[in-house]
Amino acid sequence: MTGPAGAGATATEKAAAPLPVPDRLTEPFWEHARAGRLAFQHCDSCRAYQHPPGPVCRACYARDLTFQPVSGRGRVYTYTVTHHRVVPGFDEAPYAVALVEMEEQEGLRMLANIRELPPSGVHVGLEVEVLFEALPNGLALPQFRPRR
Ligand code: ZN
Image 1 (spheres, protein in one colour):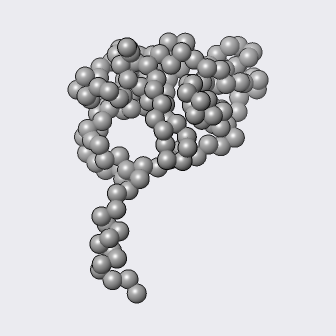
Image 2 (cartoon, rainbow, N blue to C red):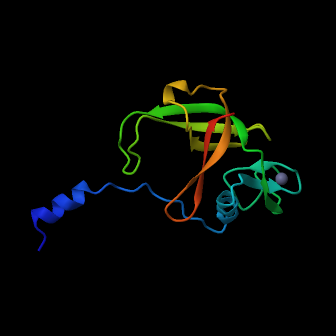
Image 3 (cartoon, protein in one colour):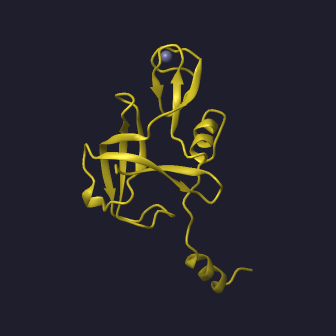
């Protein structure tokens, strides 16, 4: 039998943000991140990078893909600022979510938060660099901050 005291205790616990779960395709991405490197899938046939990872190259359909470290530098391609706390575990609103285009290749973009800058300071074209945040499951999450 569950009483009101139990329900109250559950309601006051802070929800944790969901954690990444590496799979066969994404495992190398997370292993590089854990080592402090941002790496993307690279096609050894046409030399295109792609993200997120896939089973074949999206440019030429080759299967010879390897993960190659990149500079970690890019620019904000577009962004949004979340003001409402609607997703459990993401309680630090407002925060900026940006699509960052990497300097290595036009169209090579990844989604991340912008750290070390108030959301009001984020703008399209902002030069950023990667940083890594330790996660409770031992992984490291690539995020971005203004370039130093
Ligand atoms: Zn290719």
